[in-house]
Amino acid sequence: MIQYEQHVLENGLRVIIHPDHSSKMAVCNIIYKVGSRNEVEGKTGLAHYFEHLMFGGSKNVKSFDNALERVGGECNAFTNTDITNYYVTLPACNIETAFWLESDRMLQLNLGKKSIETQRKVVIEEFKQRYLNQPYGDAMHHLRSMAYKEHPYHWPTIGKEIRDIELFDEGDIRGFYQQHYAPDNAILVVAGDVNPNEILLMAKKWFGPIPPSSQERHSVKKEPVQTEKRTKKIEAEVPTDALYKAYHMPGRMDEGYLECDLITDILGFGRSSLLEQRLVKNTDLFASCNAYITGSLDPGLMIFSGKMEKGKSAEEAEQALDEVVSEFLQGSIQASIIEKVKNQAEAMKTYESIQLINRAMTLAYFAALGTPDIYQLEYDRKTCITGEKIMDTAAKVLIPENSSVIYYKSQTV
Image (cartoon, rainbow, N blue to C red; front, side, top):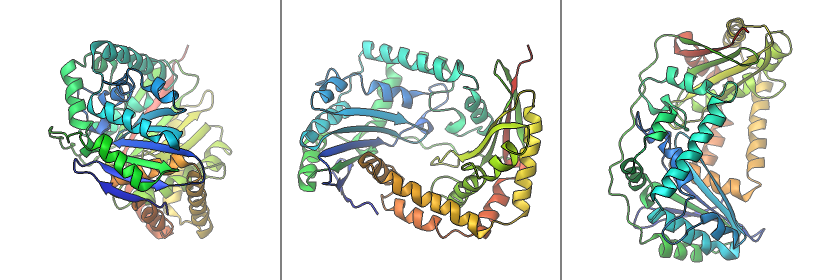
C-alpha cells in the first residue's frame, strides 16, 4: 500500500501527497484526464499534439525546460488513449519551482502561431518516422480502424492521419485547451522529501486561483458489440509476414478485465509461456509471438501478434495460433501456472514501487480511475482469481466473431 493524503481544492483540482524522506528528491506529477478517446473524427491527434505544445512556454515562462534545468530538474510526458501525464523530478528544496511552471502552463499556455506551427512540424515528423516509415509501423492504425467502428479508439494516439494534424486551426487548439486543461480535469501528485502541510499551501497558492473549465466535456460514443470476424490484408515492403489478431475485452474497471490480463500473462508472458513454447520454439512458423492487452479505460483489445519466419504466411500462422488457443479453451489451468503468473505480478508490483516516480504516477493514474486505493484493491482481487474464472472469461472473449485480424504481407519482389 502506498501511503498518501488527498485534498480537493475549491476549483476541483485533486491534490495527492506522498511523503518519502529516504532521499532529497521530489516528483511533481500531473495527469489531465484527456486522451485520444476525447477527440472526434477529423480532429484526431489533438491530445498528443498538446503534449508537445505544453513544453512550448507559457505567459511567464518562455522555456519550460530551461527554467527547470536551472534548479536541477528534468521532465517528460506521455499521452495515451485515456490520459496525458506530465512529470517533473527535482531536488525537494526546489519543489515550488515545479508548482510555478505547472500552474503557469495550466492557466496561460503559449498558443501563439510560432509555437503552434513549430510543434505541428515536430508531431508530423514523429508520425512519419514512427508510424509510416517503420516496418509494420502502421499495423495498429489498421487494426484499430477495423476493430472499432464508433468509439474513438478507432485511431491511435498519434492521430488517424497526418491530414488531421495539418488542419488543426487556432479555434480547434484553443477550444481543446479550454475544455480539458483545467484544474477540475486534473490530478496533482507530489511525492518525495516534502512536508504535506507546506505542499497543500503551495497548491492553494499556485493552483487555487485558476478557474475550472466552463466548457462542456462531451460523452464518448460506445462501441457496438462485434458479431462477425473482420479481416484485412496489408501488403508492404517488410522482411516477413506478420499477424495481428485482436479480441474485444472489458474496460479497465469492468468485470473480466483482470481475468483477461491473466489470460495474456499465461499465454504470452516470458520464455516459458504457452505461445513461446508451442509456436516459436516448436514450429517453423513464428519468429516471435506475444499476447497483451491495451489496458484502456473503455472496453479495449486483447492482442496476439507475431512475426513469421521467412517464407511463412500470416494465414498459416493464424491457423496455428487458433489451434493453440482452442486447446487452451478446452483444457484447464494448472494451479502452478496461476501461482506463477500471480507471483510475476507481485514481483512487478514490488519492482515498480522502488522508484519514487513510479509511485507518483501510480497514485495519479488510479486517482484518475476513481481513487488511489484501487491500486491495492485491484491487486488483492487479482491474487484471488481462480482458474475457473479465468477460463469462463476466456470462453466469452476468445471467439471468432469477436476478432479482427490483420495479415501483414511481405511483398514479393
